[in-house]
Amino acid sequence: MGFDDFPDPVEAMLNQHEWSDPLNRMRVGVVLTFSINENRDEQYVSYTVDELHDDSPVFLIRPAWLNKGYDFKVCVEGWDESANPAPSHSEVYSDLYWKRENDDKESFQSLCEAVLDIHEGASPSSVLERYGGNLDFSVGRTPEALLKPLPWLFIEQDIRYWNYTGRNMTIQLVEDLYDGKSLEELSLELQDIGAIHETQLAIPNQ
Image 1 (cartoon, helix red, strand yellow):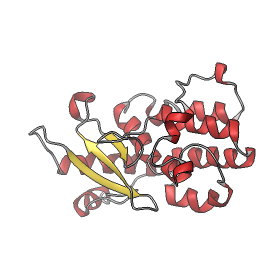
Image 2 (cartoon, rainbow, N blue to C red):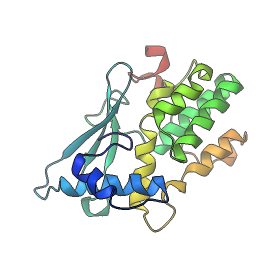
Image 3 (tube, rainbow, N blue to C red):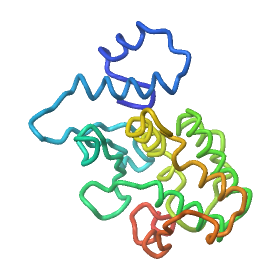
Image 4 (spheres, helix red, strand yellow):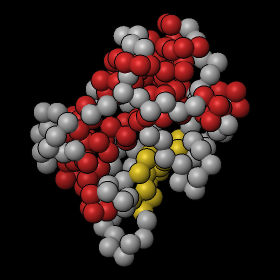
């Protein structure tokens, strides 16, 4: 399974409907993929959905611990030292904050625009192609390590909060960072920059 790329039986089901909203096609495709790989013996199922330039996989694991097991975890190898390293929205947005405070304004704004484009349904590869030349940073994790798990973090929110806010639950924080709000004005549990720089995917370690 990849971004907007599902197993053949799922594609066949999706193609029977005329989708007015590509994002809804995507989230339903994820749910159908989980459904045809139904697992009721409490064993984990893993789906590789992308990879970084060094072949580190971006992968999904389910079941997770919320929504009676229908939830899933988004993982990136090297994000941290845990067995299933799962980025959180707070960790991604903390990274944006440190880049804003330490690096070039144009680079930071381009990264925020890339995040907002992904939120609207763009693929990580397309935003990296569009903004990659502007993403020059000295702190935090690499831009691709931040951007490639994001579509799946947003889809996870869509599924967990299906009839509620979905992917809009945390995106306001990115807009607030982009607008220059201070840390005191942000609803952000800030990850320490030193902890970020201890990870395999930190820019100082690449």
